Length: 119
Image 1 (cartoon, rainbow, N blue to C red):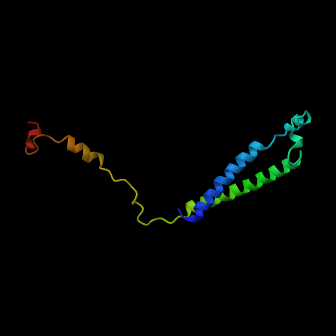
Image 2: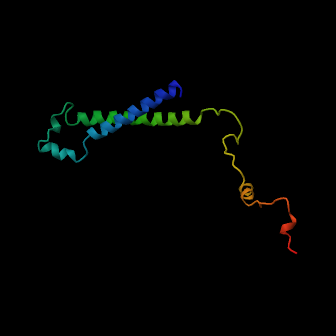
Image 3: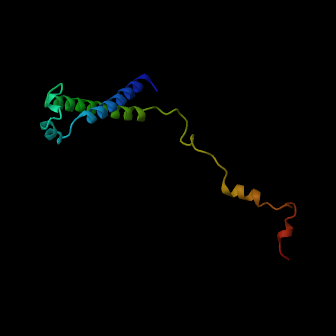
């Protein structure tokens, strides 16, 4: 794997972990009622609405980075040149079933062929 695809893969994994973390930190729409009864969300670092805007925008940016890296990895995986050879290069060659069956069913005395003819 070349350096560019390794970098894209690392950014992809970091964006995925960032999205997971930000989604877990965010409050749902029903959390506003809990803030009114003293759960402490209104006294956060960014304020009641500032944290929601910051976290949602950061999540949107990371989601965009995740989608771009997903498409980039798909393109890099599909555009790798083939290593040469023909169409049948990677096929597995096996014995035909009739050849394997004839070996097992061979008569003990193969020199006398008139023995099988009825009289």
